[in-house]
Length: 169
Image (tube, rainbow, N blue to C red; front, side, top):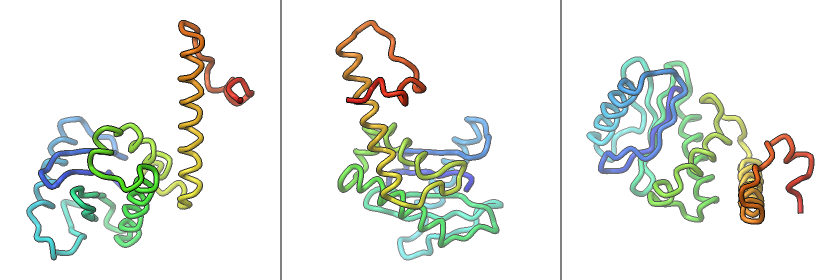
């Protein structure tokens, strides 16, 4: 996968993850061009299209479009499954995810994506495993926040010391 974009029906970019090195201007230009192309298509048209030297796979869920650009030789149906799995993960985490969840919790949406995809490839296909990792990260963050409230001004130890049991109840 080259990149993933989430955008609204109005063309507002809500999330973007690039797996190839490109400059900011190039990313903006490609994103704008692709969003316009997809929004210009009719609802009954196929969710796959050839665009430049890539294949684009997209799916609309409620008011959001989930769009992935893949290599010519990659499988479109697997990419469609990846999109669907990401939506399922978001839905499970947020409980019926909506566009506002992505807007106001974009760091969590990125974290979920990073737990699921690594370098544009599916890292973990099990929803349970991904959700467990996210739950553990949330718990760690809560423990750090709690420690910071208890001991303001004290630096929190690095992640290596977390595994030694300093944050366990």
